[in-house]
Length: 223
Image 1 (cartoon, helix red, strand yellow):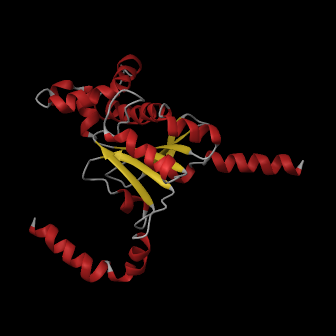
Image 2: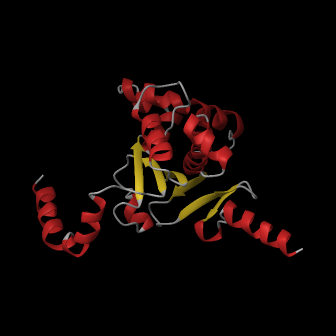
Image 3: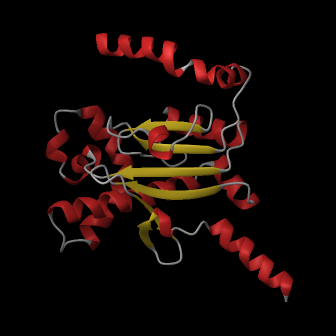
């Protein structure tokens, strides 16, 4: 706790002052363009990872970056997403999984969380992920199996996200775009799901679907 108090003092005396104008502006409201959904794991810092300033990311965190589908739970996830999309008008939603995820380890091996009934119940919202892994990745073990589960879970949660009314409406209207990422803690590398290849690729190789759509429109207009 003393370390945290010391950190607050350093924030007030060093970090806050250069950004005082920004914080004064943010006191009047927020206009983030991105909702960043990720795990509660202490090894992930979304703002550090994306080098974002205060006010640029609206962040939702929970164990396993899980989004229950519409009507499956009364937790804060759906409310937070609805506020971000319909209230704040974010343009992009990112679901970001990560390597060495304890929640996914518990999903694959329920014995790990047998003494944590609330965690066990929460992980049921990722049952589709577990089933996909059991039925389609029987040849994988260890780290490879965990990595596959982490990636599949991001895709499953993106599908769950699409069931939420505000998200579905934004997607149909073209005002909202979804992205699936996986962050590798030990290397700092981020992989994004590429719709064209159906694979997670290094973020430097990721083609934003909107950019491709704009390119196609320009080409069509030129013809």
